Length: 244
Image 1: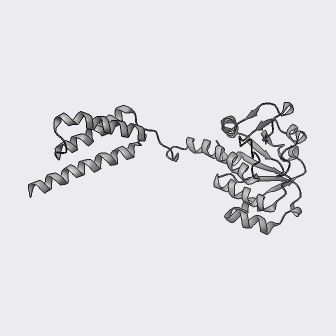
Image 2 (image 1 turned 30 degrees about the vertical axis):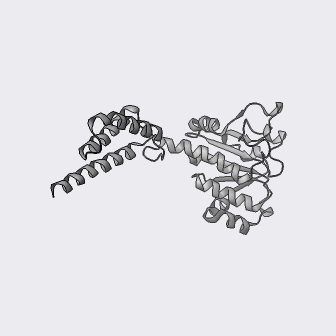
Image 3 (image 1 turned 180 degrees about the horizontal axis):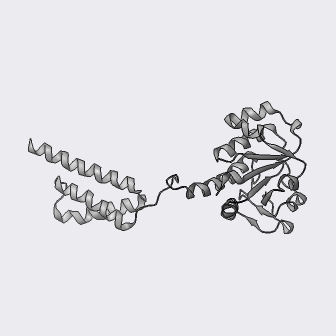
């Protein structure tokens, strides 16, 4: 995912503050290209900068256009966001599905994500200017999202896609296999036995206890190693104290 080829397009936003908050959402996710369908003179730049915090530069560099078609003419994909479904709206992708689709395209071409006016969203005519639709699932009782929240959600899914691909920068982890958990369980119970915590007949119950707890905890490799070092150090200290 090349985030520099992601373009966020706001179509006639009402609130200057929402534009600022959208800029902040973009900056949170390493997306910096903003295009606005509308007239720059209609917006309060001071209000935009207050809500953008340190992301005001995104608005300062924003380009203004007369239509979605004009704003996205250099893009390979133009995705309109909508919460409403209907025959004219076709199949709508989820944000994560859109991120998967955009991934390969952004290596060589720009991908635009279009957000409608806060009150009306994108009309059918505006969606006709897009070549696909994306929807963010929300409550049936209160389905309308704030503009900046919608920008944040879409930007975050694109950012996460890019993050996974950067070796060493993905902040998630792979939970240990049961085989690796058993190694930690053995280290713990070996050291507990060294300090006389239980006699041999009680070891199996203790192993079952730790195996059950640690497998449900979905430990990372680092957490498992920390546990192993802790119990090994405890046994070492107990041994030193007994020799005094």
